Length: 169
Image 1: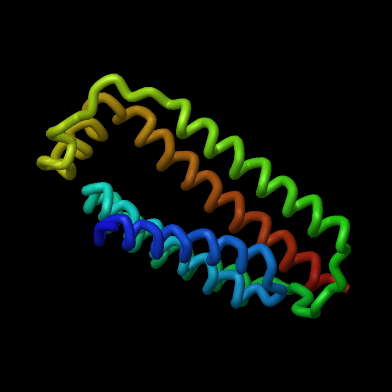
Image 2: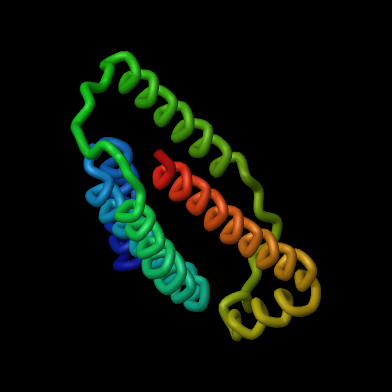
C-alpha cells in the first residue's frame, strides 16, 4: 500500500462523505460546509493526478467564490430553516439510485480501455491548458463568460421584481 493510494482513499472518502452529508443535512449552511469539504477533497485528488492548476482553480473558484456566492444567496433570500420530516421511501429510493450510479460507474471504469498512456501530460500542464484554452477553445470560453453574465443580469432582474412586489400593498 503506497502513500498515494492512502491519500486517494482518504480524499475519496472525504469527497463521498461530504456529498452524502450535503444531501442528508437539513440546515442550508451546514450543507454548504459539507459541499466545501467535497470541493477541497476533489482539489486534493487533482493534485494526485498532477493537475496542480486545476486543483488551484478548484480551490479558488469552487471552494472560495462559489461557496461565498451560495452563502450570500442563502442569507439574502427568504427560506424556511425548519426541519421537515422526510419520507423513508424517498430516502430508500435515493439510496438505491446512488448504489445504481456507483455500480454503473464501477463497471464503466473497469471496462474502459486505454490504449496508450500519456507520459508527458504532467509536464507544463498549466501552459498546455492555457494554450488550448486560448487557441482551440477560445469561442466556448467566451460564450461561457457571456452566458454567465446573462445569468447574473437575469438573477438581478428577478430579485428586483420580487423586491418591487413586496413593497406594493
